[in-house]
Amino acid sequence: MPVISRRPSEAIYIGENVEVRVLRVRNGSVRLGFTAPRDVLIFRSELLDLLRRAENPCGKSQGETAARRFPPESAER
Image 1 (cartoon, rainbow, N blue to C red):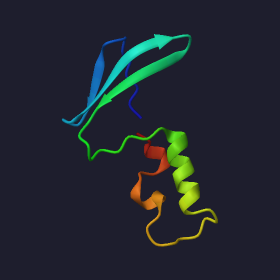
Image 2 (image 1 turned 90 degrees about the vertical axis):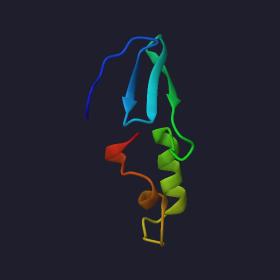
Image 3 (image 1 turned 60 degrees about the vertical axis):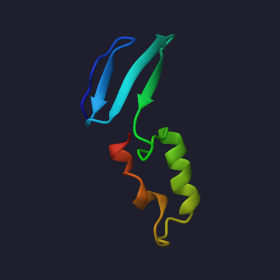
Image 4 (image 1 turned 30 degrees about the vertical axis):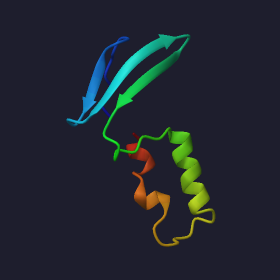
């Protein structure tokens, strides 16, 4: 996993189309802004986990699940 330090107003790019900008750092919390094409899905990790559990509550394969449509947890966005 790449680890990059940034200050407020500085950004990183993922590919050519996704910009992640540090908007604010305060009291141990970081506020990020994202600029990406509409077809790029951006989820907070806890929401992605909820989607995975809701679509596959028993851990059984049931066709196309969120776990197949979204990247594995080890490659979180």
